[in-house]
Image 1 (cartoon, rainbow, N blue to C red):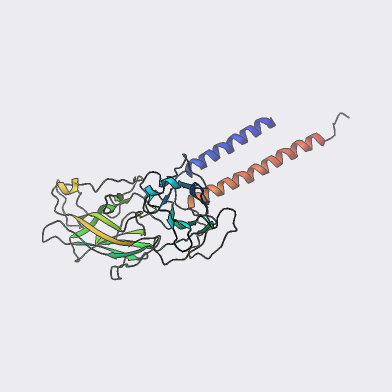
Image 2: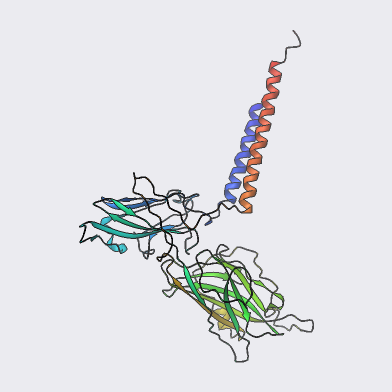
Length: 405
């Protein structure tokens, strides 16, 4: 009987753990480096090794060489994710990643300088990312590593419109913070991870027309692109939220986190905007249906997937004069440019050098993770009580004197 009870209990706990693991399997960038990475210089390669709080599911690469084979190490969940991401490059392969071995004419030492980037998102630069400048001097075995985050964007609003001359023009404005007030000045300096808000409005107030956001794509001049909004719904809720509308659809907005593509200075936000009709009591809907009626909210019943495909052209090819394309260019200075706090990394075997860094990550937990953790702890607590009661009962039975004696 005891064996049956314990077997049932263990099976229940096992099923609970499997269910929790399945629910927590979704990838997140809520991760960070712990401590200071270590670097090994030579004699045959340069290696950098870091330690993360959770399994690393991103890319560790050499700056400006993210897409060159041999210049990056990609980690995927359930494939090779680890809490100790490592990247090693042989000295003989340095040239293909843009690295050079230089001789200092004054000290006659050989030097190598490279910037390694820990990117926690598979496509974008995020607030969790870290960059380390590695400076190897082989004769003295000295290494200097700096962490630099100086992501600055000059956000200027610019619109390219298709439509008739009488159509009211939409406008896209990017603001700091979370208040969709277009009277505020447009954001001109933002850093990776800063809260920003995208606001789509009509340049002129209208009692007939409203604005509807269809699709948006973020892309670079070299052709890299990623769809971030599809049918008003976010394809990556880490980067941007679903589109929301005010009364009469005179304004639409979406909260976002400042982001950029690796190794790119310009990011274009291209959106399909539809001029919709406000719903009035005297409005009569004919056989064309309600496709042109302004929605009260975005219908996002299923999770959208990030796509590298460009904006759907079918809406433009149907001849709808109320569909317009709005472009917003973000002029970006390199996120790892000079001007931020620095920290030195030690060689393996040396004492670590600590330095104050401007960014101190906080421990955050989503509601799902908190609920799962609470359920797990409650299960362990109840299991402990049940086991204690069972042992106490059998101990009492075994210690009770036999009534026949």
